[in-house]
Image 1 (cartoon, one colour):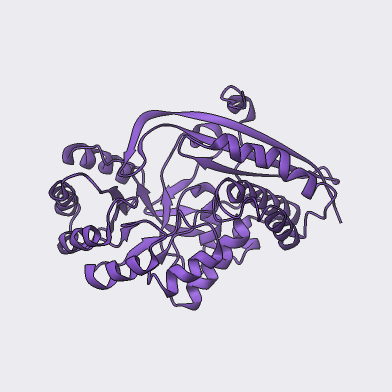
Image 2 (cartoon, one colour):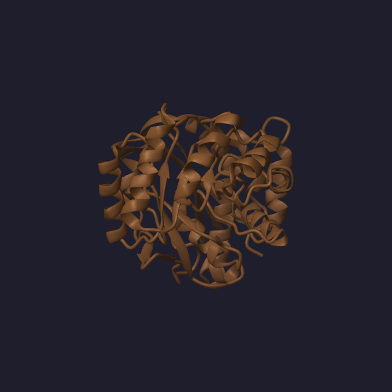
Length: 364
């Protein structure tokens, strides 16, 4: 048994090369990264991280650096379920969701990285080992782009190896969204997978109207048409809008996903390993989806999530979009002919350039 000896945390602000825009969060000028490194008595280490769209990172960092270490140091690093539950219930009354579960996500991710490294296995094999080649789409944060700009961006992504694309919708005029989606469909043809993402922009009635307008272009799914809390509304949009619904990036627990599937009737559960509690709950959500004969997709952290989807037979698409982190890790995600390739390196294989990140420290 190797006990946890130390937790080292970091908080960084990564400026974006270009402003990114979606329907509800507006402009993104920088993303925040909060990291946790775990070291054990054998001298081994594992790393995890979570991120924000530019706000509230300080609260996550405070929990990661002040609240979690006293609960973890001295514990057996292999007892991941025990550690997850210990942190979850110790912080439940003052946390449960929000910054607390994001900090827990980074901690849990680091534990699994450490476990896989010590086993000498890539994480995807340790978790089940289904198939390292995972279908992947490029997720653009591109609401502000004109149709021509959107097509230019999309062609660049195709040249990078993507064979499926997602675009943002939720402009003030629905006709502009429809025109952009139609331009994409006309450009790429009927067989090319396209997804649309509204980032919770609409009411139920507006979402139904939009889904019906998008239906002739046959998107694979309509993502987050309404707020995640309105599960009955999701079921109504799914029944009356005519499109499959993807949702989950703003859901924080396996129990929320159970209700999203049973009450909300979502077709593509979409957890984010950096905010659903980490690898441990993500895998439970993936297996929960399988028990309902549903595919699982993902949001964010593609360099980590490729391992999780490579481990399960009911994966659909991995979302990949850069937010600057690719410039601060040794080996960014590899895309080959529409598939992301889970690496064979021990652990999750994400090795940070700590010296470069140190210049972007945001604690102060």
